[in-house]
Image 1 (cartoon, rainbow, N blue to C red):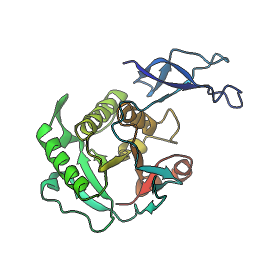
Image 2: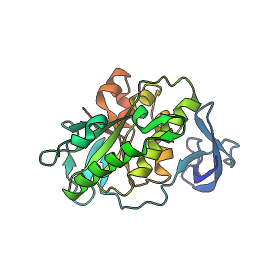
Image 3: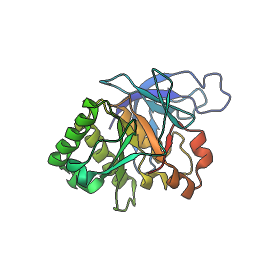
Image 4: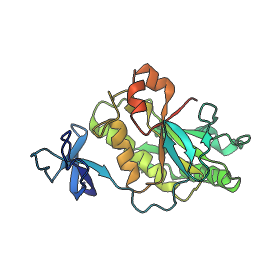
Amino acid sequence: MLRKGLFLCKKRGCPKSNERYTKCGGFDKLNHRNVNLLDSPHGLPLTRYFIGKNMKFEPLFKSENNKLVKMESGEVCSTGKLHLIYGENISSAELPAGNEITAVLIKWSAVELQPGVYNEEFLAVLRDHLKLLEEHGKFAFIIPETVKELPDADTVQTYIDAMVHCARRIKDCTSVIGFAIPAELIAKDSDFGPDSYAQWFINEMNVKHGHYVYFADSAVIEANKLENALTESCLIAYRK
């Protein structure tokens, strides 16, 4: 699979480290890292960053010091108290009180019934509720979950593909501000750098959803001792 993206030289201190290159590159699933077809002046592979494309909406929120901030007003939104909805109950879910952000927990098994077969009926119900939030000026993000094992990169790719498909089905919902990095992927990371599972997830999402911001469960971060990595990332911390 080839996609177009930005490439930056990886050598620390290189005067070209901020110089951007554009070229096609693939993804090495076995080693969950980018395979680049353009070399830096040092003969090192360049690090690729995807550019969000076909973005339907301008971003309404941004990440600042791991907090969720409104672009227009600069107001910091609370992610410590969320209106939590479980996907299986979404058809009867109530609206949040006040300015609470809604977090929708979506199971992989609810999105993908079997390999490559997606539950379009469930995704339509999800979209209906997100549209209801939109009508009331509310905002939400999606928390993917799975009980399946992720033993190899192919399985991880399938998981990510299912969530990308979910995002595709709700792409016209302005209430959706982003996705949480799945806890199962965070548990595999030692940092959130360009070769991390978290960045893999973000890269795949950003191909079509460049306005999204991304979240990380504080409890999962603490359990995996990634507090320092979090502060160096653009992820937004939340608690269920």
